[in-house]
Image (cartoon, rainbow, N blue to C red; front, side, top):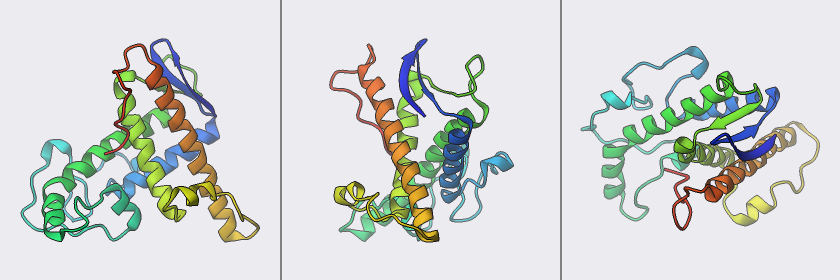
Length: 214
């Protein structure tokens, strides 16, 4: 894996076939957690019929019934409560916004997955090509991937992140944790390199870009 750099007016990273497959799998997993179904199986239905389904943006309508918070803590990181102190405010905000937020996140993830799986016409197979106009969305996708992996790794504080690779030994559980940790570290590094080229771009806004989540 090589960091993003500016090339021909695009932001371009290099991922070999195995790296692309791993990241694409994580992207698809996160989208599935949000209710998209598997990207490999083709487009999801336009409008979901259940509380876990994600409707198409164009068909989205405001719910009239309460929407319970996600049970999976990883999904709750992606769709957090608007208020920790007022359940009524949090519930109303979730009712009004959750479907739209799910749909927007899934749409961004699908774009990244397509780039990883199918590549960019006219570019080498190893190139992950990001148009500057969509760089904020890609950075936000990487944040979502890291949030889910961070939850699976029980990362709660900066100290947890710093100690992530300490104490990993032999055994099935440690093997899984080591794998997740390596993917988390690679995605963190890749996101940092993308943000660096975004900030260094000639047309970057004063003070830099700050939207890499939501």
